[in-house]
Each structure stands twice: as C-alpha cells, then as structure tokens.
Length: 255
Image (cartoon, rainbow, N blue to C red):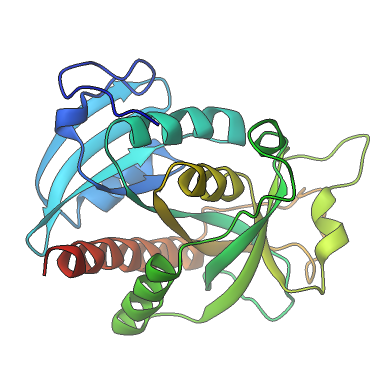
C-alpha cells in the first residue's frame, strides 16, 4: 500500500500523515482516547471526524498516536487502512470483550493471539483461509508490559470477531467456538490483524472482559453493563499495558 504524502489529509479520519507516528494505539471509544492521553505527555489533538478522534503524545521518550475507530468492522477497517496509508506500522488494539471462558472474571485482561474471522468484512478483503494472527513481537511486548503492570489476571488465547453486537433471527456465531480456546468475543480485531498482515505492518490486541457470556448465561446480553467499577479498573490496567508495550517496541526499534 502506497503511503500518502505528509501534507495530504487522510479523508475519513481527517489527519495529516505528518501528525501521526509509526506506533498506534487503536480503541473503539473516543472517550478511551482521552483516558489513554492521560498516560502521555505533550499531547496534541491532530484529528477529529465522525467516530475517529486522533491524538499524538509522548511516553517514555517515544511519540505515540492514539485513535478511536468506533464500533464494528466496516468503519474500523476504514480507520486502519488510512492509518497504514499515513505511516503507522505498529498497532495495538485495546478494547472490551465478552468473555467466553467461564474462568474469566469481569475486569480480567485477555491477550489475543489470533482472531476467528466472523466479522462480516474481512472475507471481502482476503479469502477466509488467510489467517488473522497477531504479530509475535507485539504479543511479547504486551505480555511483558502486563507483567510489569502486575494488575489483574491475564488470559492468553483466541478471540472471535463478530459482525453484529446483538443477535436477532440467527444465534450468535461465537457460540460455535466456546470450549475451543476462544477466550472472548469482540468486533474489530480480525480486521486489524488481516489488514496489518496484508500491508506489512504488525499488530496485537489486548482486551478487558466486561461480562462473561458463558457463565452468566446471557447470550442476548439483556443484563449487559460495561460501566461497573471492576471493568473501569481493568480498562485502566489495559491502557497502561498497551501504552507501555508500544513504548517498549519503539525503544527496541530505535535501540
């Protein structure tokens, strides 16, 4: 994929490539961008359009970019492609998920090694035989950073990226994978992993569980509440872990 010139505005995220860094933290919620920005210094807002809010700041002497991509694969993939066009080469997605392992508690972290492609979008990018796998260097950096943070429980395994948040006529696809190494369900990681691999970038993912769909037996999510204190505490640990991992990767690249 050709890189866009530094002075040409990326049309959907409305950011100039010159204001991005090679290291990007991508999150669903624009409010989470503000939360991540509190971990940085010299923060500058460099883009705002629709669900896409972009800031760039510094952590441990390295410049990092934080961008919100919204909910769902289609809009998130727009964001990921434009970030690659703008020069981002290392990605971490930090988000929430529904736990699919009964041992996972609310607020626990899940380090995702690969994603099942039930997102309804990546099959239009590459055949389903093409893997949606996390980069090993990014995964190792996330694991090391999580251990350094020392907060909460960490689980390692697969995620399934679903096309729809709420199931209606058809049962949710995640039910197929329960008991087979899939730790959580979310919506955007498959797209990030596929697009990063396609275009020579590297990506990893870390999630925080905001409910256990298996143990709580709530597949329709009637009692879903992601705003409880235990989940908020997990999100803070997740963001510290993600920012620390990106800074460590930047340090390794420049050292």
